[in-house]
Length: 242
Image (cartoon, rainbow, N blue to C red; front, side, top):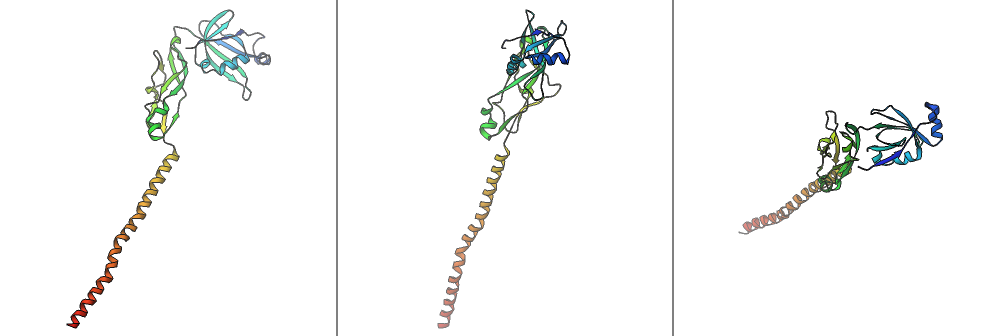
């Protein structure tokens, strides 16, 4: 697990909406740190540095080290409130971490070997990722940055469920009594329609060829009839001469 550090400062200028607006205008982002044995602490962070950190997937699903008041505190990012249409953080929440207590966290899923699956190689199916993250429980030391999902065994019209994912040691999936679908493999509609059209065209060609073959078989018999009549007339003439 990567070690990610960031710096926070005790919030100055008081609390409330007015204070938060002034903080944002000065290039800062308001936040709070809660949980553990300490009291909730109002903090502020450099807005640009925070925006840069938020682009890192690991920042959302890792134990972070918050440098505050000369100390280093392990925390988790719990919530980020963004402006409706501007790239601006309105507020951010962090939770203190106790190394001896299990945590609940949504961990990103990284899918691998999809192109090696029978569904894709043999049938040309398309794999759909139904879930992109999984809710897990573990001790802080066991928290993974992401979970790899191997799709090499996925077959067409089948689904990979949460119970089929190999989890890292010490990590348990929280599915709340269900077994949600993680990924599926489906043949695209266009391919199915093309195959059906090809089969229909082949059937039509076979049906059209059948009467033609029958007519060709009947043609020799039709040619033989006039010859039979001539032979019959010749026979009658011979009898008259006699």
